[in-house]
Length: 305
Ligand SMILES: [Zn+2]
Image (cartoon, rainbow, N blue to C red):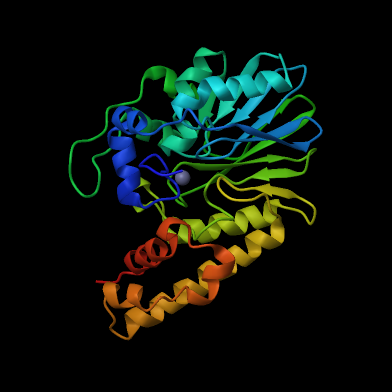
């Protein structure tokens, strides 16, 4: 689970490196040992966990609907896992956000028959990636087959396989192209990386994320969930509405701590050294330094100098 392709777990600098040199990064990482774990979360709905972001697969006589595509080298294994569930044709693929562990397999899945949908900002970032914030060349544009053929920017519904699948935009949150996917019949909510049950929030400011958007996005997700809804984060264990409420409240408490520290004149290194997350670390899980990363992002978002 190491290496630069752990895009969403590691920091923005690492993420940028992963996007900047996908071929090299994928070449460095050995995906051969990755096993795909399939978990049934509804009558005809499954979660697929391999490496990187969690995928969702809805099956039925109308065809297969997929959420996210993980890394390209895993596509063959993922397709095999899907075929263990159903022989139906691939129909739609929706990306929850631009990061490579959620979009890397796009081309392989569209070539296998899926029609790709995403927010327009996500499509734009894949088509014309910007240079990393620390300098260096802009990554190569994604091939046409990895780009959405249909974009949406407001709540949209897809009716298939007995579900009314809701696509819920979450503007300027983890990135500027986030979407949550709700399956009302199965009572399942897939949050992308706006909510994670492992580690602290990640505001990817270089890809259009913002603190305001993350907090608004978490509120939208909490509203979209009912008391019994299974909540499937992009990363971390399956949880519920209460788990999202606790995560939002923690994000707000940390925001207030960082704001107070900035107001008292502390510098970013001082604020990070103060370990403001300490009382949350055991419960939240400081995955790959996500605590310091989030505090640094809060400092930047709150206007620290
Ligand atoms: Zn992500």
